[in-house]
Structures are given as structure tokens and as C-alpha cells.
Length: 209
Image (cartoon, rainbow, N blue to C red; front, side, top):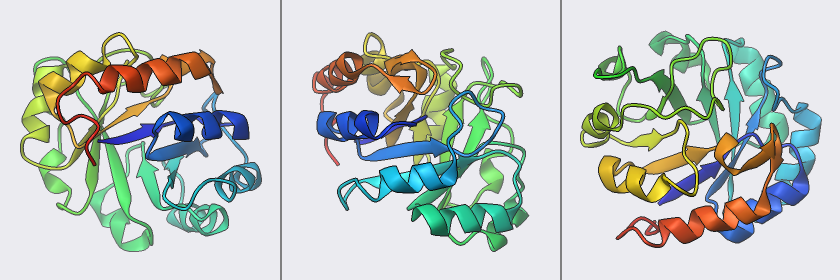
């Protein structure tokens, strides 16, 4: 399973995530986030990681030229658009795109069908202030309906105690975790990172790529 540990701000945390089993690490380039990281600092972390680990940049309503510039500097493998971006913006983004969509109770995310199949959807909590990392879970039944039709990454309130249940119920392509493995925003708890992957090993096929 694809597992992204997001909100990385320190090399030691990125290395711990990779050692535990992470497929990708996420850097947040939106200044409004408590997990914001300067692109040059992110680059120093990204280049120190093994080549099989994907670096993903998170952006919120930022100009495509800025997104592309940061992607080139940091050598991102993909960009995650976590704001109110439109499908038309895809023509100006040069990296593969993950689009975050809000899942509200009892309903599938609005506009999910408008995004082409090559775009991976990230299903998260609706929060226009923090744009992720809230620690709140989403409606897993609604998320499962999306994941059954297309490649989707489950986010929102995942942690070692609930990740096995979440994966078993939603069956997503991957998961994205930030606050659930932290001591504080941007500071990862290495014990919780290990516990997360131990919990995933208990789910049939959850750790299979």
C-alpha cells in the first residue's frame, strides 16, 4: 500500500518515516500551515532520501508557475493541490497531480467525477482554515464508494489505533497521515510511526505495493 507521511520538516523524521515503511513524504509549501517548510530546506531533505521514496509537495491556491518552480527545485515526484484549484489548472502543472477533495458526512466529495482518471484523489476533512492535518476523520463509507471506482488516497484523522479499521473498510490505493504520528505540528513521533506500520501489517494485503 502507498503510505505518505505528510508535514515533514526535519530530515530525521523523514528518515524515520522511510525506515518504518513510508512510500512517500510530504512537504507543505503553503505558508498558512503550521507545518510549512521553506522549499530550499525541503530540497535538502529530499535529496538525502533513497531514490525509491517519492517527495510530494502540498500547495493551496498557489500560482501554477510557483508550483512548477518549487517542484523543479525540490525534485518533487508529484504535487498535491489542497485548495480550490480547478481541472483547467492541470494543463499548467508539469508534475503528476494529487487533488484533495473534502468528504462531508453522508456524501461523496463534490466534483470528484470532473477530475480525469490520471489524477489521484485525496479524500480529507472539509476545513478551509487549516487545509489538512486536523486530526478529524471523514465518512469512511463515502470514501469507500470513491475508492471502489478510482485511485484514491485516504486521509483525515488516521493514526495507529484506527488505521487498520480504516483501510479494511475503505480499501484505498493509499493513505496519508500527518497529525496522527506527531508530537507537535511538523514534529513526528518515531514510536507512533513504527506503530502505524505495525498496525498496517495486520490488514490483509494492506502493505502490498
